[in-house]
Structures are given as C-alpha cells and as structure tokens.
Length: 231
Image (tube, one colour):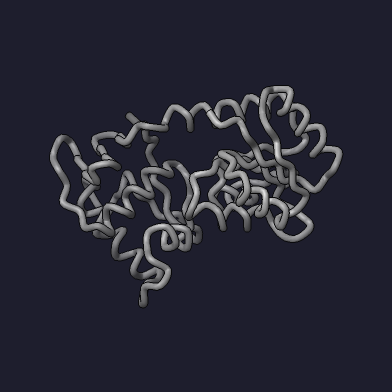
C-alpha cells in the first residue's frame, strides 16, 4: 500500500491537526490550501487518496474530483460541513468514494482512510471483476455471463468495464463520455451514450426494460447498482 495522502483544506488549524493525526498513523501527508496547490501536488506525487474540502478559496473540491476521475483511480474522500442529502448526492455524482461531515472524530477519519486504502490494495493485481453472474476479465478483454461468453463491441466493453470498476457510484454522463470516448471524436453526445447503454443492457440484463445492473439516476447520470469484487 502506498501510504501517501493529499489533504486539501483551507482551514489552517484543521489542515494541521488532521495532517498530524494521519502522520502519526504512518502516512506521508501533502497539504494544499486551494485547488491550484492541490493540482500541482497531485501531478508531482500521484497519491492514491485525496481528502478534500468542498468549499475552497479558488473553487469547489467537486471540480477537482470531476477533473481527475476520468483519468485516475485516485480515491476521493470529501471533508465538508455541507451535510444535506442534496450535498451528499452531488458529491457522489462528482465521483466521491466516501464523505465525512464536519465536525468529525479524527479516529473515525483514520479508520475510513485505512479501510479505503486497504480495499484498493487488495484489488491490485486482480484482473477479474465479478458481479453476480457477470465476469469481466480486464487482461483478456473478455466478458462472461452465467458461464457464457458475451459478444461485445469494443465500445460496449469499454463502457461495461468503466461501470464495473466504479460500482455503486453515480457517474455523470460527462464523466462516462470522457472516460470511454475519445474527446476528439465527432458527433459524440448524450444520445450516443444512451444508445450504447441500451445496447449493453440488451446483452447483460434479464429484462432491459427493468434493469438490475445499469440504472438511470434522473438528472445525474448512471449507476452500476451492484457491488463487485476483484479476483
């Protein structure tokens, strides 16, 4: 496990106290007070986990999450006083892995960090993603359902892999388009995504009209609504 963390928090006292607590727990902590510093530190160190406030002097932590999510598997844990249901949904829609509201117990934060990095570490080196009867092999680029091989186009495979790598997380349409489609491709829009979602559902869902895997989240995007394990 790479025990490095980027802490993005504009409150100097909280930044210091949280940073010290994590360092006493064995982590190397890089600290940033705003998005500009956070981007520079992440580019330099490529940490596996970012602890990030949402309300920052030069923008929103959600912006940083949306920016990094399509091209990085970095874990995102938001630290924020914004604790309404709408705030939390927005955080998860941006790509957050977890959410802890202020004030919080430092021990709880450390426990969350330990658990998140441990799960990520356990997944490394395992190239089969298993969810119910679906098995996706990221090395062989092959998908099976209930023991039978599925015939997918390259785009359908890429879409399925991205969804299964981000289970139980609301993914915005822009996130999915950025991750699965070349940004220079012409005529790629939300309708293109909807068509590919429909075609993928026809191949993996028992009843595409009542999807059990890929669900629309009105106004936000899509969610792979099953937990997955790596083997």
